[in-house]
Length: 233
Image 1 (tube, rainbow, N blue to C red):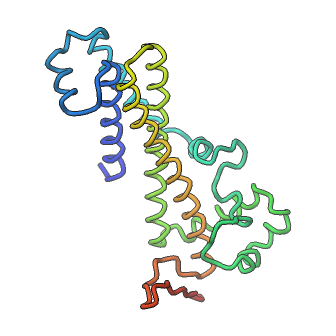
Image 2: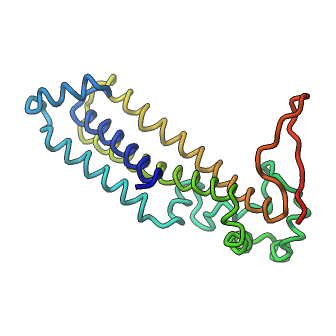
Image 3: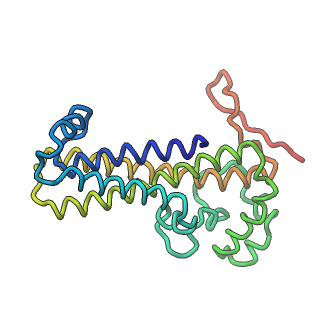
């Protein structure tokens, strides 16, 4: 079992426990979890039913992270149906990129000729990915992005199940609901922002490597500014 799978399993199990406690209308914490085991048959909602729902959500979340097509993950991250890949606007990006825009367009003239068509931008990026995919900076960024994407998919599923359970169990004490809203909601927002950022970083890192730009972190000079250099091939 590699590290990515292990982290996905741990993340899913933790979310499963949180959902299980909410279904029993208990706050999140070790004490509440032990209480649920000690008074297994004393809750209004059968503990076995709560375990079943939480376990099923955990397994479905892992399956979704493993089997869901990348296009669907990208749609969830970038909130667009058509051309969801982060490279679809790489050649018109307003964000700071580690290379010169004119050099990029000279390297990929078909993008400008197409009027910066999103599909052409994506295809141009994908066409050079195999050539540079084994560069260490690309390998590391891709691993990071794959992990964040999958964690985000799992987090969305748990948030949806939580809201469905909340509506079906209404009313639930505000103290219980608020803590679980924070847990499920905060992780979705955090992973959403992280996934978008790392996806753009992967796109820019690959284009930078393709153009011969050093995308590794540079040493900081005494003035506090980073140095930048181009490695010409």
